[in-house]
Image 1 (cartoon, rainbow, N blue to C red):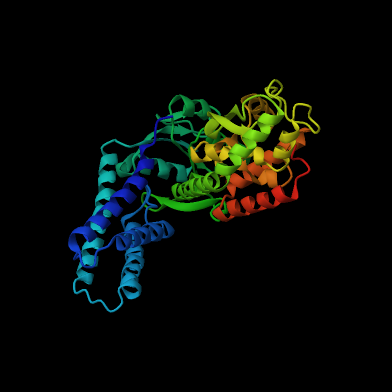
Image 2: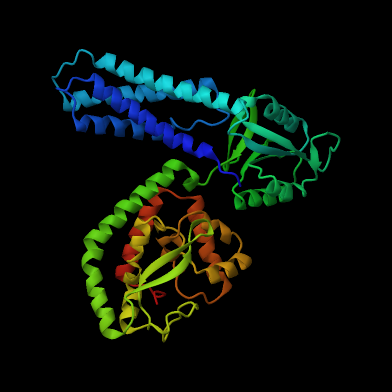
Length: 451
């Protein structure tokens, strides 16, 4: 799959907006009133308000009037926050050029936003930063979409053709719906437009699963039944042609990933400094007294998108027996007496906060499996691949719901995957906090399957 450089537009836009904001304040303000707190305040207020209002949520199909609405909303909130600073922190101070400075800031940010908007459209109209697209269907709505993809160069699409089981008289007819799967993989297609009028429900399910598995953007050409589907949102392509956009998973959104990562760094840093720093030498001593071997047990686990990383744990088994790839069982002879306590209290997982700090894991997420187990479950369990779309976690929804420890029957892993997928599809920051809180309660209560 080709790299999608569009993903860099949002972070770069945020960086340059903050740069413009700080440079104007730094060079225009009188040094009497300029301080680092004001720069931090104004930058954070811009960043938080812009993310909440969706200031950076502009896409290929965003219209100028939509962009202006976004600019007006952001300007209004930012102006309020700007003058709030002087009301609370500079009360009684009269600065004659406040309004003038704010006008300069807003004007430059507007100019930059519009410049980026038109520059990208112009760049795409020249055949750059394009997405390869195909259409599945040949009804009248599909033909309008095809016409727009071909004629509106500013959208940045390279239309390759259409697939249909009905109409086949066209020079850009590529084959049947079934043949589209191989074509997509062979030609590195980025987006698939599907006609809901022509495709059957079973075909749509297969296409949606195929799109998720291969990181493809799927858009649906609607019929009246699907307009209000909760899993979809309506957007307009070209001259107000409705298209249903399959909603992104929460952690596919840049802001959500950033929030989760910042929390992971902050939380793991606190744990390493406040707990791990003094607990580590104590655990080393206790483990070393009972049995010989390395204190930290390292093992390759499967991470995000199937990549490998070295997962750390306190060793809880005898060194010569711990390499067995089998799942831990109740009263497992490999486990030391100290190891049994470490597992019961989940202290053996503490070194994984290092994995979190390094970005290999998250505090909350699906538990990482060994490759040998992952290959097995991938063949046997529906939706197992989906859990690889996020970073693995120290704890997760499945673990606090009682699905941890030995896998005795197929339903055990199926329920884990079901809860992992639910977590991925319904992620929120509050859900992470709830899972962490419940995990802490379980540690103190003790868990039946913690062995």
